[in-house]
Image (tube, rainbow, N blue to C red):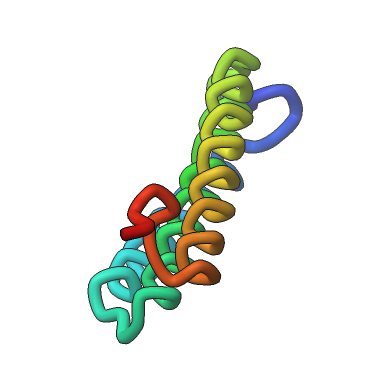
Amino acid sequence: MEAKGIPTVFTEILSGILVVAVVLAFIRLARGPSLPDRAVALDLVATIVIGLIGVYAVMTSEARFLDLAVVLALIAFLGTVAFARFIAKGGLPWDRS
């Protein structure tokens, strides 16, 4: 069975590699050691999940899943920018007492 010219075996191997990458990123997220390391690991998890969604979209030949990947990418980017601002300012922007 093929999905638009891409062998199913290839997409299954790629999915397996991405799942292993998510597990390793979650280990980094849990171990830390610092807050910025955990933020980068969380961003990495989001990026790998976007890759998994893309592979799944290719496997099922459903372009609708790519919309989900784009939305997740935008949310992950905004979260990363917000966290970078949090680190740069040294606290919450509304807590100025």
